[in-house]
Length: 153
Length: 171
Image 1 (spheres, rainbow over the protein chains, first blue to last red):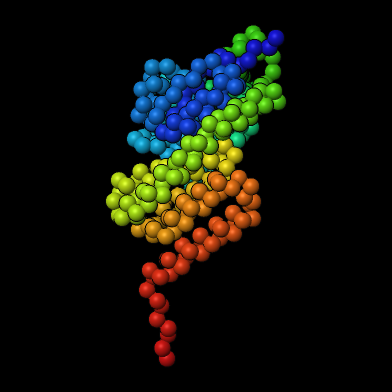
Image 2: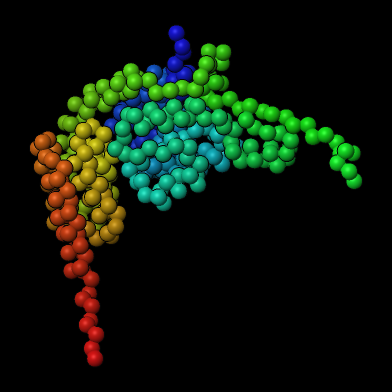
């Protein structure tokens, strides 16, 4: 029988609403995710990231202290090698173009709108595990600049 | 210089694995696809949690009613505590099968974001609409849209009342 890739994942869920955290925990368990780490806000998420080095981060946008944008920025800019390319899925009720653009700017991988629909979350998770780049796109560009003979497939 | 004298370019191709390939190793056979059985399990989870959430939602909406006066008084801490609950309802009500309650919460969140001073009547009407929609699970979308339009009109009227009347041009 084929192995379920989600069983191999450790996912960090960040949301200041306990209901949302437990909803996501339930959905990820239904999906068979191996380990789910929960955090209340961006600051707690950061310390749990350092500790557990998850394969994926799912974060709410609006939280205090430390919202989802600040968390993404911190993950992308830090020296921890894994954090620069860890996939980040942002869940937000704010779906204006400006919010989506801001999410892209700080390095969000996928964006899911609230109200949360299981299919939308599942599709984003599939997109993330099927994604080719595990290396930070900026790092890829640097390699491409330094070694023009290298092509990434 | 002729091109025949140039060093041949040696290209190196690097194939990047996906997370699924890296995690599954030799067990990986193809990109992951949506499994309808898993999706059904996820939907069943929402249904189960939704039954538990309906009590919480009712409690949250009833908690909001006595908080209105303080939230509209200009006290930022009271306003933030109130907004936090409305924002929570906005995010969750729709997910758990109460989209109309979620729409009223969204309208109220938007009103609170856009206005430094908030009007008690407008806030109360929103909360009462949320309470009524929760009590009447059969409430239809059309009624909800009519109510949302009325609330939007109420907000515009309040804005117009605050804006000094424009002077008509004199000849």
